[in-house]
Amino acid sequence: MPHPSRRVFLRQAAAGGLAASLSPAGLHSAANAAAAESAAAPRWAPAEGPNQPLGQARGICPGRVVWIHNPQAARWDGNPAGGGWYEDRFTDPVLADQMLSQSLRRMTEAQTDADAWAALFCHFNQAQGRGSAGYRPGERVAVKLNLNCSKRRADPAQGLYNTPQLTLALLRQLVKQARVREEDIVVYDASRLANDSIFLRAHAEFPGIRFEDIDGGDGRFQARPDKNVALHFGDPGTPHNRRTYLPACVTGATYLINAGLMKGHSLAAVTLCAKNHYGSVYRENTGPKDAHKGWNPSHLHESILVVSRRMGTYNALVDLMGHKDLGGKTILYLIDALYAAPHQSVGPERWQSAPFDGHWTASVFVSQDPVAIESVAVDFFAAEPTAARMVGEVDNYLHEAALAHQPPSQTRYDPHGGGTPLASLGVHEHWNSPARKQYSRNLGTGQGIELVTG
Image (tube, rainbow, N blue to C red; front, side, top):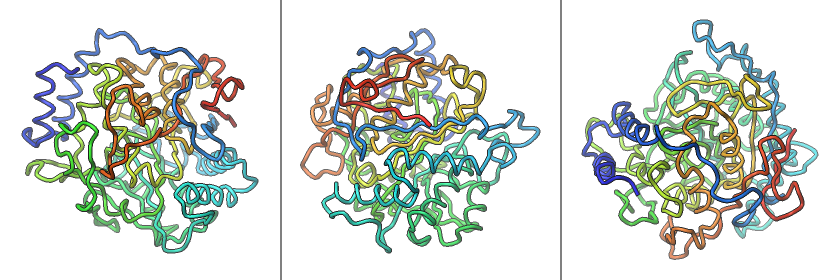
């Protein structure tokens, strides 16, 4: 468990007792405390051996994760003085379109992009007990981006956020292939700003798509909380339990697409799709100096401190992954890995592991299984020598999520307070080796993950 002084610090930050709990100063204080503990910690290695799946695989092809890698898609020279990674001359929009198209078809085994989306919507609705219907006009689709490092204006010195190229590829897919009406799509990150590099291009091509961020203005709308929908945390001692709310654009949506990034994290080791929803939580009374205007998840930091928390302990990420309005509405998990960053607040870094070999990661990952896609990404991070944040119990949250019905921590995860604990949220497993990258379904030895490459 965290040292008592750390628990006090994080409880105060969560309650708003620290004026800048999630401002750069507040976050850096928590990050520095974690970094001090992790300096002497050994690099993470899985507690269990390879190819030992846990949980219940999900998806049309259960447990399938598709990984598309094309080094030509990301060609930035790494020099901010000469321009930013977000520009089309450095990140190829045509290849981004092609990579996403290929990944969707491989994930669903469809022959066309339109058929892939039809399969996704039908599979989701069948699982929800709504029959084999597809998307219907009037049903909202929310797209969660990770804009943690985004400011309003594009700046090569900013850290990594979703690439405009893959974001536009996703919106084109929704409008032109899935035939979702523009006015039924909302793109959001409630705690950050929608950058011009994404918004201006998207708005020019699809003026009916709504963008919501922390401030609104300049064509964007300000995200609003729905105070009728509260999170019930598995640890009832979590600050603001039952007083942490979700965005109205999410609770009013029928479907959700979780578009995370390939980032390390100073507290959680990784920030992928699960932690992407730290930008989807609101609480009141965070103090007048809270730069995030209530969209402030610092009260959840204690549960994700991988250095000081043991395996088999509660993790708030499971509540987010399993909530009926978050994971419960998600039809697609996407990791934008055209570039990867060593932690949440910095720009891209080249990877040294194979097949990247000193180049950008230049990859796209997709899945219908929220646990499987994170498990694969964690294995990639573990194989990357520059991923210095990989210390502590990195995959504790994946064990908890895969076994949410009977988690090792014995937590009762019921995040929407409906009285019924979560079932397994997906399948967790580690590959056989960084060189072979094979999971139990690849080997024909179990009902775990299948990694499909393109």
